[in-house]
Picture 1 (cartoon, one colour):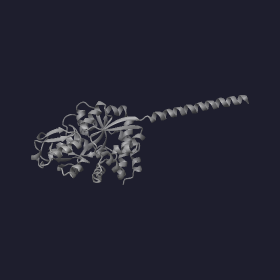
Picture 2: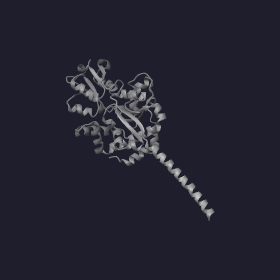
Picture 3: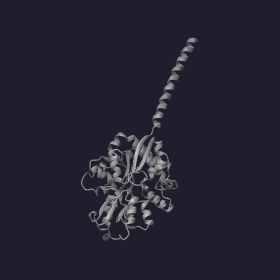
Picture 4: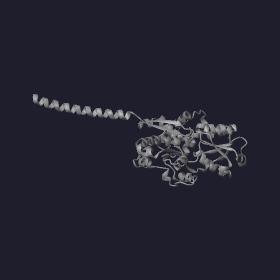
Length: 338
């Protein structure tokens, strides 16, 4: 009996040690997972195309994916894209124009998802500036050179029979400053999108050209990263896109919650402005954040010289992988279309 007891005790001890080791290993995994991956994300302006990010943050989707995401206003798309190229940012909310500009100058950025596939700018002018003749020779504000507010000015001027050389383009940073400059008469015109479009209309600012109804295909607001990050941080970026996509689905399906988030982030209390901004978001946002190839080609047409291959600026490999895994089908089931 004593021998048998010794054998059993030894076996029990071995099992106990094995269980303890397994538990220790599991606890180690939990500890490792508990330390979130930091991602620094930038936006060009606090506008309604950022709603998917804000909703993902507010709903805890980034945290659930093991991420700690800091969102910073960079005051212009090109400025943010430059920070992305330098490594200050990991992800930037910026249109394809900035990507093209920097890649043509030796950068290696890729747009990996789209939060808007059409132009969403309205061209506003100062008091007394109502015709092309009034605008000619004056200052037109853009956020930063190479941004969407810059590249789409060309289209707005064309509608007026003008060229870029007919005006003086100046960098003015974010939409709040551009709107204030138009209202004060410091500049003659600037392009704005929601919610600043509605704020400008409410203030009686003159509309010179409204590009929104034309629904021009354009990678207007993209999710952009460096190509090296796609290779070295692919897992973190996949998690980021999954959380962003679910944030987009939630914002599109839960109007009340989305409007509350918009009001909080935009610091706007007027329900009419929030209503219009949300309707614009809902009408224009691609549900699965899939980039428009036609939108990319339209932008490349504005930048003669250099590569015209869409693949040199856009990489949808993560989105295609998520589709193959059934992620979008899962989102469709979870968030029924209203």
